Image 1 (cartoon, helix red, strand yellow):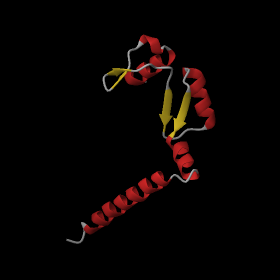
Image 2 (cartoon, one colour):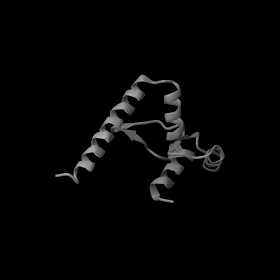
Image 3 (cartoon, helix red, strand yellow):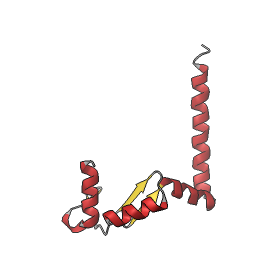
Length: 98
């Protein structure tokens, strides 16, 4: 376990022990939320219980929620990134045809 994660966990269990600032301004901390790419419900519950976190979120569930809510802004973001990816890979294919 890395030093940064150890400090994150220490802050989660004893927030008053640490001074946290955002853009140089002191920020009160009530707890901690961990964000992972993907994990099982059992894994989430286990980590919350073991480390005393308020929640464990996953990028997978956040994206699923945004898609289910039919977020226009998120769909526009996906369309833009999809276009950039297509442009990138089209350009890479073209490297073989000077």
